[in-house]
Image 1 (spheres, rainbow, N blue to C red):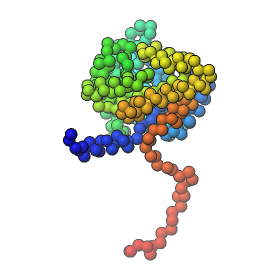
Image 2: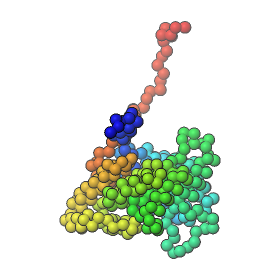
Image 3: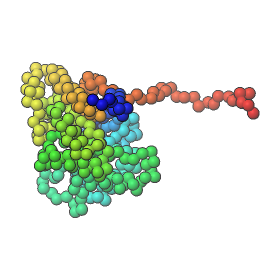
Image 4: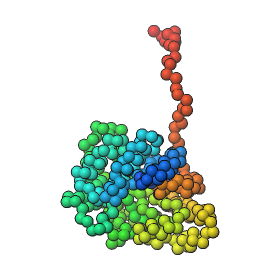
Length: 329
C-alpha cells in the first residue's frame, strides 16, 4: 500500500475539522397570528447563529409580496442572512428579472432557484416562460452580471433542489442526477435536498452525483419527524413512503411528549447518518416552529465555526489625548 501523501493528509484533516453549515427553512405567514408565532420562532432560531435561513415562495409567486416583506424584515431587523426562494413557473423572464433585481437591490445575496409546481388546473404558463430551474439560474447570473459594480463584495450564491428519492415527474433517479448536473453547468453553487426518510437515500444520491461529475455541495434537508400527519402528507408529495416502523411507533405513542421524543431521536439518527456520509451541512425544515427543530439541533452537537464576539457596551468615541513626546519628530 502506498504511503499517504501530503494532499491525502490535508484532505483528511480538513474533513475532520471543517465546521458544519446550519440553515433553516421558513415560509411567509398567512395571518397576523401566524406572523406573531413566526417572529417568536425567528428570534429563537437567530440565537443559534445559522449560516442562512431560506424563505419560501408560493406556487406561481402567489405570496410574493409577503415573502419579500419577510425577507426585508430579516435583513433590517435581524442578523440572519436570507436565502430567497424563486420559482420560474407563472412569471415571464422580464418579470423574473425585475424580481431578481429587486431582491438584489434590497440586499439579498442568496437565491434558491426552483422550477416550481405546475398549475393543478392545467393552465398553460405565459408565452415565453422559463421551463426549467437551469433557465432561471442563467437568468439570475445574467441579472447579476449587469449589477457587477454593485456586488463587489461577492457574487450571488445560487442554490437548487436535489432529490434523494426519484422526483415524482422523473423517469429515473439517473435522470434526476443529469438534471442536477445541468443545474451545476448553468451556474448553481450548491444544492439542498428535498425531504428523505432513509439514510441510504442521501448517501446514494451523493454517490450517483459525484460519479456523474456533480461537484457542488449537496446539503441534506431534514424535517423533525414529530408529526404523524405531516409525515404522511410529505410522503405523498414526495412520492416516497416514510418508514413504516417509525409511523407505527409514532402512532402508538401514548402522549405528545413521547411522540416528540421518538420523532426527534429518529431525525437525529437520520441527520447523523447524512453527516457520516460526508454531508457539509444540515438544512432543517422548521414549518415555522422552533421547538422541535431546536430539540434536534441540541442533540446533533454540530461543529460550528467560531464567530467574533462584539462589545455589549458602546465604544467611547472620545479620542485619547496625543502626547507628542512619544513621537520622534
